[in-house]
Length: 72
Image (cartoon, rainbow, N blue to C red; front, side, top):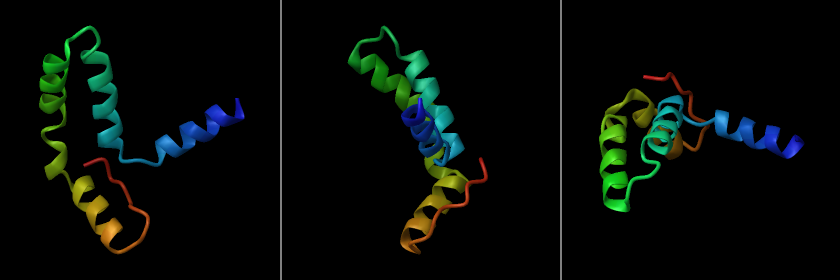
């Protein structure tokens, strides 16, 4: 149980938009073949690269600091 809680805490520290998109991809691509699943994934994550959180993640990485996610 402690390992699961630790993993959940690590996951929760990630960008909320990316986590939500990953969950949508997992739910919506079940049962699809690979090409269809990748196409569905592309549709769901298309807007993430232009989000404020994506810019924050890149800046935090470049500045060697933890990111401050806003969910935008």
